[in-house]
Image (tube, one colour):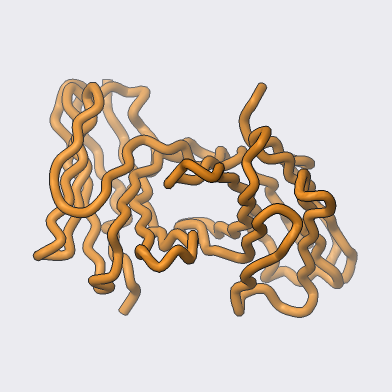
Length: 112
Length: 113
């Protein structure tokens, strides 16, 4: 079993829809949780960063962390065709290893 | 541009040849990382530098791979005697002392034929 599981998709939604992207993990030591967006043949771009459990909002994006369930989510409101990309979750323990563990990424397509 | 810069962006090489990738991190970022990403997978950690010191290497980094960061500025990742299984995107990232997140470059695509 991988440390971080992420549904690879693809996920297709109409423009304006609310998108929910999720990751589960097995290592309870993870404390830092990130979401990256990656366009085709480009490097990952940091979207959201959260520490421990709770919610964080930034514009149309909301990140949620539920450590008790080992489950994190990214919500995208009013999705746009420009949101079409692969979304990667990443996690890091507090041990200071500075090594991120990534999910496989979920491909999202927002249809105009 | 003040982001992480990688060069070359694309490289096609014949099996058995050596290739070298360069990474210029964000200015004043003392931590530099190399990751590898294959199609349909997330990035996988390869190695990590703090200033010029290589502090950790993944078991994914075989003896054919070597990374350096002379003077704690730019870094190079060399792959010797390339194999088809080395075909991937090699990502560089950097991080500052006060940051808790890493910032990636655009990646260097390697195709071994």
